Image (cartoon, rainbow, N blue to C red; front, side):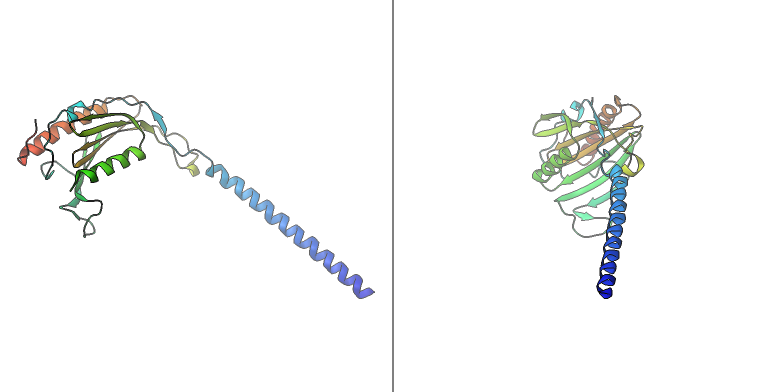
Length: 216
């Protein structure tokens, strides 16, 4: 009888101890979820603003149907040359023949020359998916689009607050070439992107003429 009582008391003690531990662990888990959830459910997407940019200086160029090289374009850093990655060596995927970057004043340019038109189209469409398009124009089998101006946010851990600057983008698919133009300003409406696109048109005219590729 005494042994039964002891066994009953031991079982009651173990039950209460397990229940208390589970409750403590559960409360800790709930608190952890609530704390991490504050960051988890904070917005991460940038705020989008209507954009304004004149793409016609580039799309009005009568480019060759197939561009052999962009060797005449100025650049700061070359990533791919004649189909090979200049950083790690080896063949570059995605049918890329040349890729390089240029920073000119307030504008940053990414140039990608592909071995085929279809590869350039795929890259251009991917860019439109990554950054929503505000307006798109086509001319002479080429395309250009102005993306929505983006106001980025801080990381969720940092509160997801809006940053104090705005990023404007334009993308072009010029036969077998893709070009992205990016500018940054402290206000959503700015003429910096239009100025950068005008600069791109002049750049392409000079570069293609220097490599004996006709452009008007």
